[in-house]
Length: 256
Length: 202
Image 1: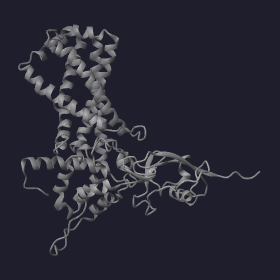
Image 2 (image 1 turned 180 degrees about the horizontal axis):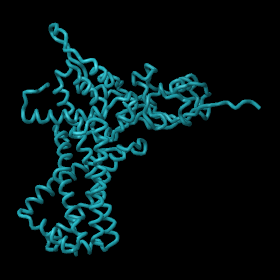
Image 3 (image 1 turned 45 degrees about the horizontal axis):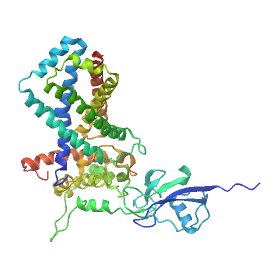
Image 4 (image 1 turned 120 degrees about the vertical axis):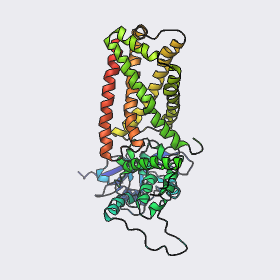
């Protein structure tokens, strides 16, 4: 009796072009210990033959850091959005179903266009402005304990999982989603960034902004970095409440 | 929604759901509860509410206009969501979906209820214990009323939670948890009041 070959089976949602219809294709590859979804996709790429034995095109997907800090390799794995680099095959139920995140436009196969999130970051000015025509000197100091707290918010890798999980981010709504909102809180917490806090608040009080949140709280449950997204949103709700009174009645405290 | 009014509309929607619509509903349920003390007590309480001075102005400003805005904008909110409780069956996501479903049920119920009682009153019918007894003698209507009243109470109680979060009253996870328990209590208390009143007519 020969020992039975151990295999890993996949059902992968594929799409050849931006506009073409998606279809499922099954794959089966030989088992190796300690594989993750990316190493399995690489294995398929080495020999792109599907389960029926037909030669096919290699699967397209995004990846970069391979250690869950860049956010590029997010996809739906067995129905849940997560990073494929940290999705260990040994811990997944088979057949492993891979599909692109549905909130984003598909470029090809598992590769999606995440640029809406980068556009949102530009919209909310998710940076600390320090450029000037002369040396502005050292900025105000940040308390160490505040820095430690802010570090948690800075872990956001723009992976898109929170937008995928959010029921209010979809083609019927223009909600920007939790990801840029939490960044507003991060940059408003920075002592120099806070000098523009009212601008960021006014931006997220615009259409498609903060008020679109329906508090399903899927984002905080799904965030791979454990960012307290709903706490950020609730805190911004409080700040925008005050900001709306200030801008309606007028205030001497625009940025403090 | 065009011209950057979304923030204002959303906050107004949240506020109107509690003040005055939610408060009115609570008061309405409490007045209904007089039915448990017999026909005469209910008719006296309902008669007092109906004979308030400026009743049409009060109804228009405290009930009809806020309710109409809350209902129409609420439908827009409900139908721009893409519910996903099948994939993400977390407690809050269920509450999110139930809030939208209960809102739609409440709207259908309230529309029918206003037609059956307030509009009929305007057309000359008298709203009293007898009227409700007649309506609820039909088993279908009884179930419709029970479902409608519970949906409205759930929508109010859970809406109270969303109100606290949306206005930035409950920010930290712990405070939101405490508000969850508080609104659960509101739901249970009002449900008992509402159901006791319904069954007093049966």
